[in-house]
Image 1 (spheres, one colour):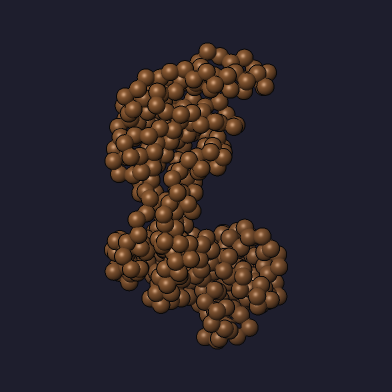
Image 2 (cartoon, rainbow, N blue to C red):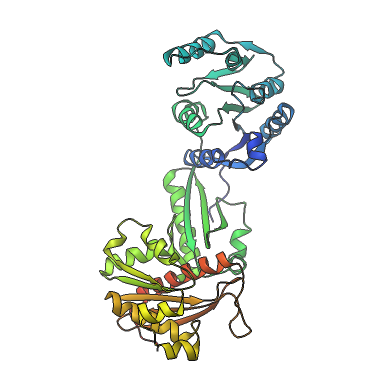
Length: 424
């Protein structure tokens, strides 16, 4: 999609710290920075994580400057012996660290305003590599650093997210070279199609990485996000390219696209119920209230959600919902008739327009040859709808429950979009 390539300014992000490399802390700085850069028309081509090793940090910075015009480093500017980014930058520049009197004065004032004595170890934070410039830290003690290396701009910022965010917003964004291009991002949310099937359907688009529109996929929480990144010489042209690709993806994928951005089956169902002025109730067994939790996590759920009966035991299905004991005895709790009756009873008990039921074998135990682990029956009842869907999900207990909950909501989404039709 698009006519020819537009040169996009590229950036590489480097996060430092042993707490990141050993998994104790999740690197949120890179994700935040990548989003800010993209909004400025700058494409992040790599996220890197390096431990507290000056030589490794220096090596990463050198390598990054060979691939990108902008290198942003976060972490390693504190006063402790394992804060080694300033030494690494000095190594890259072939320079020595020198005391910056203005930085030292700001540090001393920082502690004085707080009625604290500055310890000698903090003085290292006023040491700046020759050839580099300090960047004010408005809420912390560690100044940032900015330097040129070859044709690249290298900027080092503190690791604590609050300090890094503030420094980027107040200073760093204005130090970055202006991009000659604009970038538009559009995300389509897909549910009900496996990642391998999606890849097969979009193979030609996903493998085309050379044009002005790039499409990528990620899987999280049972949903696939299809991200369209379009580059143009203006915001309007980039947006138009993204929109055209979205139309093509919608043509190919059809109803498995449930929404855009960060929408979920629950949020889409909520909008549809509100627009139709209809209500929902639930009867959950194997999911143990998970569908209800998804619904009630949304603001305004009281406007369309009447309630849920979590009936795990057969006696609860009988005594709370009203499922006949003979049906439970003859068919078993995990069966089409029981799922249908659970949904019908829930709709009657709560007086809702719609009701969903779920009953299944979440595992890892309890499966049989006839009713394997992962088997879930989902009932859906409306004014003119009486359906039961049979699914067999993965063997992981949490995956079975999550997929069942989201699939149940997706069945309701489809029914709301198609209109109330009867299938008995």
